[in-house]
Image: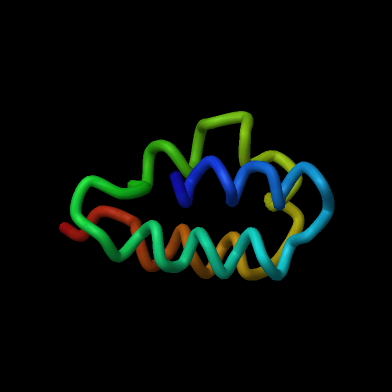
Length: 63
């Protein structure tokens, strides 16, 4: 449910709230993962924000 709320915040230009919800959604088991954040068009409004790249870097697969 938090991911859905983050999408609503992202598309309504409430980027601070969207990143707040995304941050918590990436920390729970079964939450948002790298592939979803990287490719899903839901997150398009966030892609120009530097916080988006930081979040992707935190979720990126490790070798």
